[in-house]
Amino acid sequence: DLGWEDDPCSPKSWDHIGCEGSLVTSLELSDINLRTINPTFGDLLDLKTLDLHNTSLAGEIQNLGSLQNLEKLNLSFNQITSFGTELDNLFSLQILDLQNNSLEGAVPDGLGELEDLHLLNLENNKLQGSLPQSLNRESLEVRTSGNPCLSFSTMSCNDVSSNPSIETPQVTIFTKKKPNKSNHIAIILGAAAGTILALLVISLSVFLYTKKQNTEVTYTDRTAIEMRNWNAARVFSYKEIKSATNNFKEVIGRGSFGSVYLGKLSDGKQVAVKVRFDKTQLGADSFINEVYLLSQIRHQNLVCLEGFCYESKQQILVYEYLPGGSLAEHLYGLNSQKVSLSWVRRLKIAVDAAKGLDYLHNGNEPRIIHRDVKCSNILLDKDMNAKVCDFGLSKQVMQADASHVTTVVKGTAGYLDPEYYSTQQLTEKSDVYSFGVVLLELICGREPLRHSGTPDSFNLVLWVLQYKLQKII
Image (cartoon, rainbow, N blue to C red):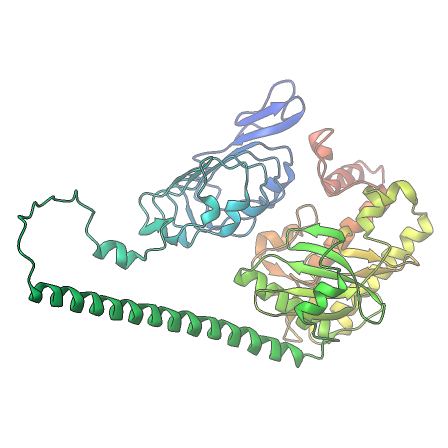
């Protein structure tokens, strides 16, 4: 029992918690058996310091991506095995302590994008390979001791172990001798042999590099050919994408996946071009998943896929352009100041989105669970008709009589179904819960998570339940 009751910051801060005014800015829960990072950690949007060292955390780092004010993160002395993908979003991070975990593989390039980071402690893990060069800067201290092989050098572990340490050179003074012909011949032969050996090494290196490149291209081409057979509307070349977007000139949206650009096809049709910068295998799987699903379905309340580009190292989706923007923009963004949504219009938007979800759950075979229903994933056309978008996290239910799909928990804080989180059993009801949060937003006009007011008003669902229990509604 942590003794947490009432307001965390007033009249005095709870134990293990630090406040600035009424905002929770630090949380220290070391030596507690947490085992996992609960999605509710993502609700603490003002958090600057989070200390979860020695809390029995395991698996990948997750549910922290929304903490964009976080400056110090201590996850040391746990059993974490994977960096996950959410650390890249912690733009304010200055200190990241991951020592004494079980992290394996390579250090992700995304950590180098954290410009404020000045201490990265990776000591005593199972990491190996070359550190990203983006981490090799004067303002950043990187600690790597206690790993099998981890450095900025491109030298392999075998090379390191097989080469003795460099010793101080010994100076030898030779007495001047009369040059003879045999010495000249030996020097010439030695130089020739060295040149031939160098050429062989260079040729072998070029051969291996070319083979690797051909393998990568072959894999990409093979995947692209398979994707063409999914009856997607169109396969675009990267050159066509650059032309349509005027070299990616106008950004109309950004997210953790990348950026969305306004484009115009050769026939004059406007499109939204979604360019992903997540090049991990997870990112590739999410991209292919979205192309596959949208190639199979057509519905007036689901965003239409115009085509895709999957050339080497490029993951681009081309959608129909919906000039009305997202529902979130109309409720909380700049559009909310320009156009007020009437009750009739709000009801129409809710019905449109519900029809799109109903088609996914009941009108398509196999059934599809969206898994990330939220206001920013409901787009509006020029007539304010609503369409559900973003199927990167969606899951298919392959067996017609299956009641659920067991899967790793994914979604957005504030919209996540508590039952899905606790059981990892995904059902259509998980989408229904998230859609219920959207309905509350339409009615109440407030976001699912907020960081002002009293603690019992931080979460929209809990705030509404409080009034329901009091029989006010």
